[in-house]
Structures are given as C-alpha cells and as structure tokens.
Length: 266
Length: 288
Image (cartoon, rainbow over all chains, first blue to last red; front, side, top):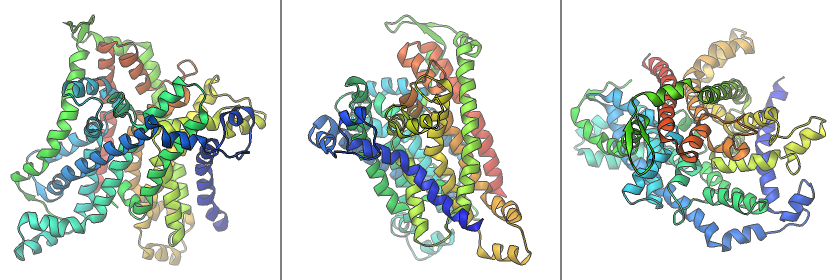
C-alpha cells in the first residue's frame, strides 16, 4: 500500500503533462503531417510555426501586449492593495467587515456579466484598445485577491513588530517601507504571482476591451483559429509559447505557492 | 491572535482600492441594472419596463436549462476534484527535492491561458488527430465530442479536472504540511489506523483550506466561459452551453440587452448568495 501510494503523484503528473506534450508535439509538425498521419512524435521536425510567430508582428506583438497589461496590472494591484491589507489586518474601522466582503464580491462577479458594460465604460473614457484598459479591468478581481492574500500574510506577523518600531522612533512611512514590506516580502511575491496568474489566463475581458492595437496573444490565437481554418501547427506553437512565462514564474514561488492559494491562511 | 485597534483614519489606506474597484464594479453594475429595467429599439432610445425582463428570464425554459446544466457541471467537478485532490495531496512526499518538482509540475495547468486550455484539449481529444480521441476509439468506444452530447460532457469535465484538481492538491498540501510531526508520533504510539489518522488529525487540519478550495472552485466553475467555449462552442446543440456562454450569446450575439442584463443580475446574485454562505462558514471557523 505504502509503496503504490508513492507512485500516485508521479502518475498524476504524467497525466497532467500528456495534453501539454500533445500540444508541443503538434507545434513541431507541418500541417500536412498533423492532418495526414497520426504519430506520437513529429516525423519531420519543423520550426516553421515558431519562425512565423517570431517574425510576424501580428503574432509577437500579441505577446508584448499581453505581458504589458499583465505587468501594469500586477504593479497597480499590489501597490494599492498593500496599504489596504495593512489597514484590514491592523485596524478596526467603521464598516471594515462589510467593505472586505464587498471587495470579495467582485472576485465573484462572472466576467461575462461585465463584458458589455466594460466595453462601453472604457470606450467612454477613451481607453478602449489600450493595455491600460485591460490592466484596469483586471483590477476588478485582482485587487480583491491581492488584498485578501496580503491580509492573510500580514495577520501572521505579530503586532509587536509595529510597536517596537514606533518605540525605536520610526515614523509610520519609514517603518512601513523599511521594516514591514521586507518582512512580508514573500507575501508580496505571492500576491504578485497571483495577479500575474489571473491576468495572464483571463481572456473574455481582455478580448472585449481590445481590437487591433492592444490585442492579447490569446485573442490572436482565437482569431487565427477561426479565420484561416486549420493552421493547427501554428496554433499549437502559439499555445506552447503561452505556457512558458507561467512555468517560469512558478519556479520562483514554488515554496510559497501553496500558502498563497490558501490566501496566506495556513 | 492580534487585537486590532480602532482607527478611523485607516479609511485613507483603503481609499485607493475603493476608488479603483468601484470604478470597475459600480459603474458597470449600474449600467447592467439600468438595462435590466428598460427596453430599447436601438438609437439609444429606452423605455421603462419595470421587472418585465426579470419575469421573462425567471420563467424562460432556456435560462432554466442552462442553469440546470451549470449546477450539474459544478456539482460533478466538485465531487471529483475535491476528493481526488485530497487523495493526491496525502500521497505527496513530505520533504526533499521531490516536493518542489511536484509543486512546479502540478501548478503548471493553472497558469495556462484559458483559451489555450480549450484549444489544447480540442486537439488532444479530436477523434481523428487527438491522442485521447484516438485512444478511446481504439478501445472500441464510439467517441466524438463534437457530435455526441455525452462525449462532449465527458471531455469538458475531464478538461476541468485536468485544469483545476491541482488547486485542491496545493491547498490540501498546504494544510497537511502545517501539522506538527508530534501529532503523527502521538497517533503512532496510540496505534491509530491510517483511517483514524486521516479522520481525526489530517481532515480537521485541512478543514479551512478545503473550505477555501471549495469556495474558489465553486466560484470559478460557476463562471466558466472560455474553456468550454473554445472546446465545444457550447455544443453539440446546446448541451454544454453553461450560464456564461448563454449570457454572452444573448448579450453580444443577439444584443438583447434587457434580458441579458436581467439574467446577469440573477446570475450574479446566485454566485453571491452561495459564496456568502461559504464565506460566513469560513470566517466563523477563523474566529474560533
């Protein structure tokens, strides 16, 4: 029993990787090979799909657009969430509990509900089709999440830290920047990671708020799939490339990721 | 636990958050409320309609059908993902390099853009070029998710299990690793069976993280849109048209703003109500 149990994580990871492998496999095949034959690995490896993506601006700009709104969103979300999370974890104020729940309700709003009003709102303020529009729209669910995670991490830090610093003559801003922020550095890392994650994977709002200039890579893929029919190899290559940034950032937060998913509450 | 001090100036700390979130939440929500009580024939001319759209939506067969499919989908994936995630977390190594390897690989599906997940499962499950589709058909089972409702459901659920079980694994693992070794040693001395260890030591410790897991999985699966839309397009027929897919069809496809807005609000209220129940449970637990 004990020995078989040890293989379960390995089997699980194997099953998780199978569809990803299939995608990578497809990305190195020519369209003819994909449609004509069935093989577990590419018979004649081609890099054409990747070359197309790296040389055609409509493709590689998609990556820049996605990365730019994700970065803007991470910076906005975490910098405004930091003081708010501090307030929620340290102070009691009028309406704090209601406010906290109201923030969370926004994490619960189905993006489909907001798609059309968002389109109208961001067109009205002349931000339609800019990375900033998508970054701001993603704040809807990322700010509440960042506040929730950071509040969890901050509540784990004893209040004595704050009090000692004040006794030592630190002013609040100096204490916050010099002592408090470094102390919860891992929490900030996790919050940044989650903002990255949810902004990177979301498509409905990103697609609704952009048309040409700021089109995210994921939307470029959807449109290619529908307009040029069966360019599956290209689609697979683009898909494979969208997995890389995620795999890259997980590595840095691997030891904190579980605590982050528990919203800092373990 | 830290005792909080009363400080009304703390409002200034939360003000930026309120401004940003309110801009994104309150204005669009008001737009939706506005549409939900009016009728339009285009050209920005609106007529007051009262609660007519709400009556239409609540009595419409179509809404009942997609709500039914949605609840069925959410229940099935919760019933599969939560026990499966806990089981995998229990078998994970406790220390060493393998922990990092497991965590990194298991978290990977969570960071793939949702439409890529749909596209990936599409080419993975197609009966002619996909590995899964080929394999199932090779077993002698007639399988084609683009034409058979049952296959479409099977594929959609399998995709969601593939996509999100790791979330439950990570959370359950976080809960498990917070159990001090002394607990296990005590259980060993008492001669406790594995089941007893699970029931009286591990499960209570995982209670809070599992509540979070169920809350997150409920919310996200109830709002699911992109993955099934890319995979099946809601088909064959309407068999995998969940609430969000139906809503987008009505709002952006048919441009029936009134009914779509009323449906949005009913939809939002359902998510809100269930999430509030979970949240209250969780906070009650935390207060103890």
